[in-house]
Length: 288
Image (cartoon, rainbow, N blue to C red; front, side, top):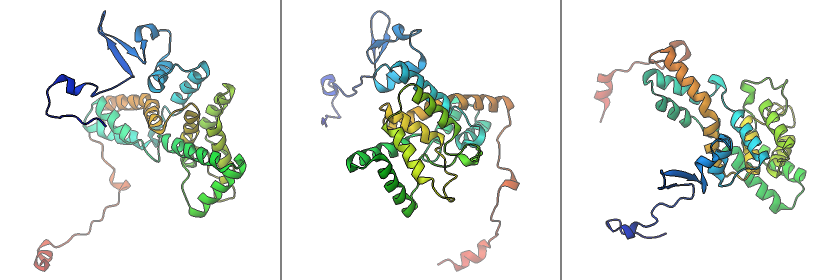
């Protein structure tokens, strides 16, 4: 790492302080932005938002198949009503501070290990694919060994389960219907890769027996391997997770502001308070 003289005001000492290949602005003729080297004006109207977003994140124009799959990913988890904890938090927040930016920021902070973010499943499957390749085992044998290890240690498998809260798992056994639709399109476009194949094999071997038969491949467990097969890293996957939940978030925040239910509270009947009263005078006398 280059060591700098932080007290220097010499421009030469600060050369290369920020380095980026994402975008530059050509000062002539009118300060036009170039995204990954391509003129934004040239792309407008010729490439979709999905294609330009893919280019911006990955540094290359997607193939037509990748563009269709990525577009499908962005619509797969666009909203899920108040089942998304970040939306409930955002609406509470906006009821007291009716600002779009406040609501969006609150909803984004609700993305994480157990909800919305496809990165945990993506990171898991990327790591396990490396282990599979290093093991030399056939896919099914590796999946069985991995499943047995997780069951024996009661380890959580990112991407499995959770959908039973709002889905009829008897009607949709095996995987969330959104995962099924996404993977169907991925297959049609010829983009089923080893990460998706491994997730399928892990689920097949893991969800065996009455105790785990309800575990489906939830929607983030479906998206993560698909993005991994297209070369996305876990941090990029989290960014994509933010992208696909923004439209629904905007709609909820606008609706909350229009309803004007000021300062929402948690209703008393939904809460359980410890109402034990204590005697301050007696406790102060006992204090040393």
